[in-house]
Length: 392
Image 1 (cartoon, rainbow, N blue to C red):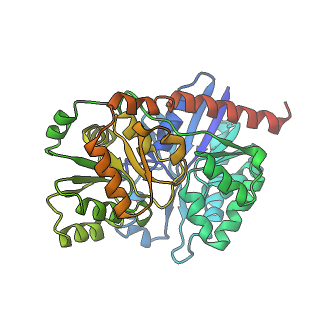
Image 2 (image 1 turned 60 degrees about the vertical axis):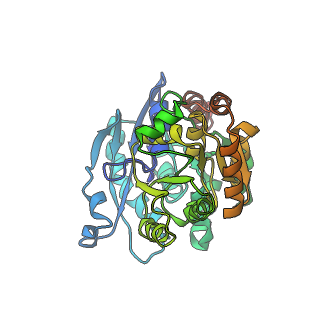
Image 3 (image 1 turned 180 degrees about the vertical axis):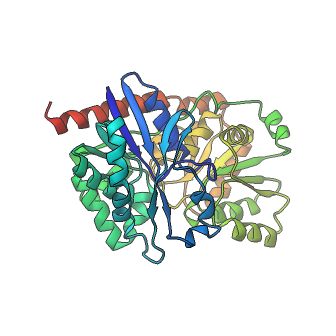
């Protein structure tokens, strides 16, 4: 029996049901395997009282300390998020908060390995906890954790050191693996395990009927991603503005919502561009099946689940050359890799609308990316980490 403690600050909760949903999906697939037991620790970073009552934090503060979430046992301990620290103390505060909690948990769940699912602050904290409890540690890089947090020197040093000390390292794409090596992480410990996609949920449908069900008509571009500058929604809005009759539907939530809404209104695009907010996976599947194109203008990525979900739905993608884009767009039917400019996105979107690839050909691109394949590789990787650590 392999007992895995999944540590992830990126995990859904009642106030953010889509936040880190790919971590949940991976964990559920792993937990479904024979010979594996899993519990999840999804810490909540909150400022000290009374600042945790601020509207930004209050929904998170109200989450239960432990619950069953879609069949998983999920612990949600608090750790101190000190405002003004720029995040540099997150890992230390996280490790400090978790040490007594894990000591109590281990009496009933003697975990064999800690699997950290985001590199910061999870990774450095996991390394400290692994040493405290004498268990191996695996850390997974997903993209923004490496590309964004390492812009801060104090945090970059913590990330590099954790990568050097971890017993195993994972990346979601080959280019991200190269970025980890460039930070000084040992290449021989890094495996690339790409993400999975639910091929039953995300599948081609009658596109016209799907549009009608959403109250839309005509050419439709979908985008799925948090409303943050990294995702480049501005670029897509500018691109669609130059394509008469084309509609854009953006699914996601985040701090850019107000600014993007104002931009859409100022450009006179309210009748063609919609911000859908956070919608459940079932509705995302409906949106992607209805769309003629899925576009995402991210400045950086690991290997975005939205890419694969679109392809599984029979919908080609238009994306920049970031992260694992070339591992996904492997044939013309998959879509286009373009420069990260409105003009380049507009040209590619127009091409795919004018000459759409057959949905079944698009879907075939996604078929190797299953959660079953992902969990099989992850199970084997974590088993090897434990064996090396114990010398067996």
